Image 1 (spheres, rainbow, N blue to C red):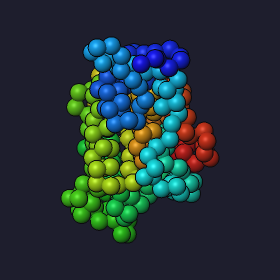
Image 2 (image 1 turned 120 degrees about the vertical axis):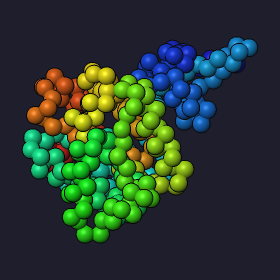
Image 3 (image 1 turned 60 degrees about the vertical axis):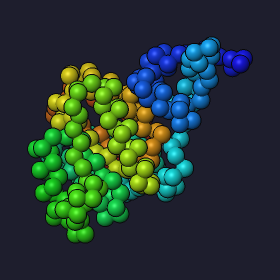
Image 4 (image 1 turned 45 degrees about the horizontal axis):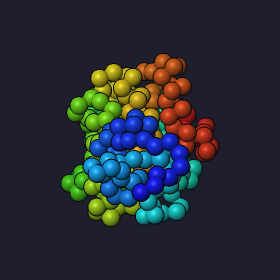
Amino acid sequence: MRAPPGRLLNTPEAARFLRVSQASIRRWSDSGLLPGFRVGRRGERRFNESDLLAFVHGTSSSQAPADGVNIGGVAVPIPTHLATLFSTDAGGLRLTVPFLADGIRLGQPSLLAGTDPILKRYLEALGELEGVDLRRAREAGLFTLVRFDEGTRLAAIAQWERFFAGALAKEQNVIRLVGEMAYVRTMFESEEEMLSFEEAFEVMFKRYPVVAMCQYDVRQFDGAALLRTLKAHPDLFGLRTGTFLN
């Protein structure tokens, strides 16, 4: 088979290019999401760099509704990966609590990444809202606290892929995610590893009908980390940015 034009990458090189694991590359290739071809008697995978770039800027599954979701009065398309910045405890809940509450009312998977202290804060806030049956949502797996076990970028990406694939298997067409990053940071080996994860997530999530809000308490992160955070969330700049600065 004649190779297509452009620079060709093998599986490890493609994984480094997209900042994901080799297992993710193989899964996407086997499912047809990522174009590639086989070479040699061993059938080794090869990927064209232009296809990888197209994959990075690709759109999500057609299962996602066209009208998106509402966050703070802003119509947000699906998929979207946002960074929200806040400087007070109340500001940290202003957008995310209504966002998760809408998901629970609509029967959409609503995921909160963090540790037990932040879960307690959200349970108290959500429990005060009309029409939000937290007990039923948790029993049905529609409101879940997510923790990372291994503390690495690749392990976290693989864990999110399992969550998203499980939701799609249940024919869910919107997945809502809030990551409280000051708490998420404690699950990683270092802040650098967490920020690398954010950059890898920006590539991976586009293949799923996900709206993700990564919450950054500006009292807990320095300017260099916040600048890198904003670069890892380009979707923010296509919206009314001020809405997401609390």
